[in-house]
Image 1 (tube, rainbow, N blue to C red):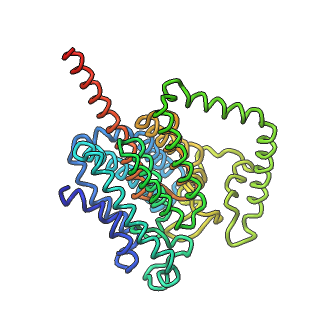
Image 2: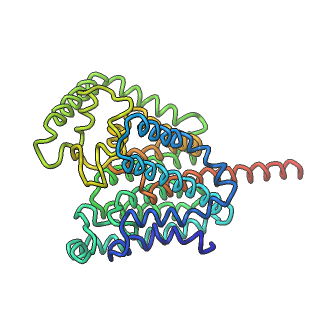
Image 3: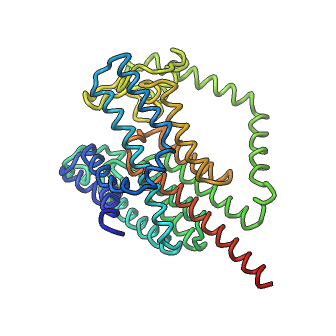
Length: 401
């Protein structure tokens, strides 16, 4: 791969965290530098054609501009959101273009070897970080939280992004024609890396992804998927949910009540309950356009409306309301529906997206956005390529007969 193509990948996935650890770069500087390194893809016509998929984010930019004109919040606040959205757009388009290039030039066996080598490296580094956490944190030139200290070679405190990449590598391993041994090895390494971290959500998510992928592989091998077995399983699950509707309703009402209580008591402690913003929705009613940019958390002044932790859902809803959060998730769900196929595969991608965005701010996480789009296009193009090969083989066989 030419150096201009490999440079941003080296920064995001191998060297950026070390530079931040040594105090040479901040997170924002690293992100801006990575976006600058990705700029070369926009000399390719296919990149501009791919931008049409980002139409919800472009509408989001228009929403930011409209609220700036109408409500006149501080201009740096709106420009910060423009930066957020551009981070997602550039990283997403780059991920898809890089995947298209890799699908054209890399065979499945080569991809498998690379995935195994990458995961093995992350396992070694994460093991060292988990074993020597206190010393590792003490030697850093940048503040690192104890819970976020196991992030491999990615950006500082990117443990959630590393977990998501592990989950996506498992999906790729099962969709592409990896050998059973390599699929098992990728899954084992990925699970080991995630369980060295402290995120319970990521641990549950990767076990869910592995389970879905194994079930998908078994259904394909036994031919059950041809008989609509996945749809049958979905209906069975829906039937179970319907039969236990009263229990789910009761638990849901209790959750809403608890979330409202958490919202009303949000200022009693330094950090509020994780679900206080959900209580705000039910207590204050649905807000269409939000309270303005950087209301939930302001990275410029380092202030919170109330601290319920980082998330993609909370700032988007509180800052830009139902319209903002709907635009973002229409965009993400559109990508999943376009590039993935089959119920279990789509559920796997949705699980990765949900687990990450619930507890992390996804818009500026270039590693997550890049690799999420990379994985979607990789499985889509590889599947299309092998389908075309099978058609050509079948046509050749008919001609010979």
